[in-house]
Length: 117
Ligand code: SF4
Image (cartoon, rainbow, N blue to C red; front, side):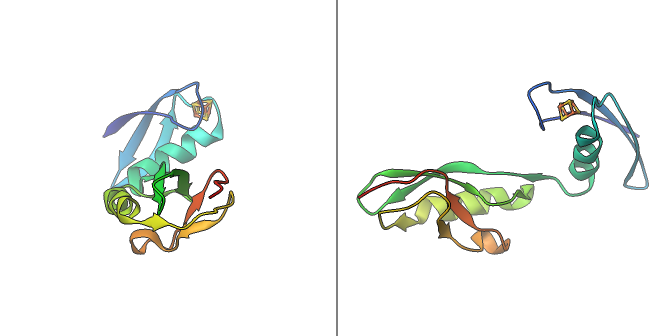
């Protein structure tokens, strides 16, 4: 079986063809660099994404945040729901953990910008 993918690791967006046998990627073509091959393997076996969004402070100001590491795709909805329900106290410094272990993934949500009171 061949799975067609678009690499999302850089703006070139290479079109990848991953040959899959018994649930494993046995070869990848169309990639310009090794990152494309690694992306195809991850996407087929355990797809992950970095989530970027905003969390609201107690005063209503939005704070830009992201997952510190990519999270499993099936956990993204749960993570975003938890982020939406969270209110954060200001001030916040860039890199501060605003939610730890989001959606029981073991991954933290961190601020990507400092926000004063
Ligand atoms: S394969 Fe390499 S060059 Fe192509 S989109 Fe992915 S990271 Fe970019």
